[in-house]
Length: 364
Image 1 (tube, one colour):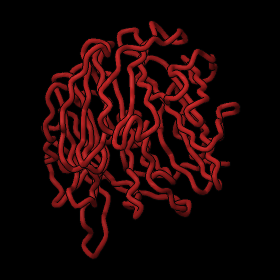
Image 2 (spheres, one colour):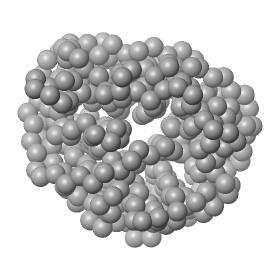
Image 3 (cartoon, helix red, strand yellow):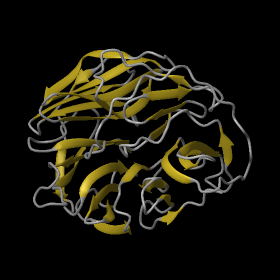
Image 4 (cartoon, helix red, strand yellow):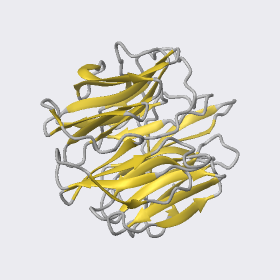
């Protein structure tokens, strides 16, 4: 879950799209700047990026790898422009050929690796909205959406069969307030958490994506949850305070763990407060990483002992944003630093030692 949301603009609903894959093993795209990355295993991953068009503006490009980035192939790019409001364009790989892309307002999807893209409709979602998360579980799609109307926000979950062009609101999964958030996780079982005004938190779990069980919320009042999924039987969540607390450019946060889905979460020691929380993921039951931005720097806070102690890595001085932090297994992780149209550009960083060291991933 991303705890800083970019401004939302109204974008017209896209019509039906199609794109033909162009296979070019080991190819590189001149001027390619990554926007988002998603991996289904340490070896198989995708990077969505943009390069300057022949005339003007930015044209989307999609690359895929089956050997951990040693070779890349060009795939049919999604019909998704780089938004003028600098929203993060998010790529989600739900399977080897099942991909979603959202600019925060609209969603397009493919079930054949980019040969054909189609729009995904969200009936009932506000025109001014932010699509925060997309996952698949149990043959169903789940989309977390925050809508804006005046001074009120509403965060809801839309769902439907995987591959459906229309996802309906999931009854009973909605929260309203002055500021609302939520998160979804599917590793080890589906989890849904919804938060309002840092006071109210609702939490559900499901093994099949159809039957849900309410459970004790991960976080105490005054914080909101980012879900890390289940690792080695442990359920992990990061509980963060509102941005700017205890001081500008910081967030208070703790790692919380439960022994299994549906049971009570217990807190560990305080994590470093520097930077505003932007992403969180766990590599193992004891190893977790927080991506944060503050003071023009990108930080990765990492624990290897279940949250008792932490070490901080300054990833770069781009200071624009850290996106898509993910650990496909206990050793391999990725994160995107920056935005394609930012003055400082962007890069995909990768770790193969559980987050101890990170290096830019060569996209060629």
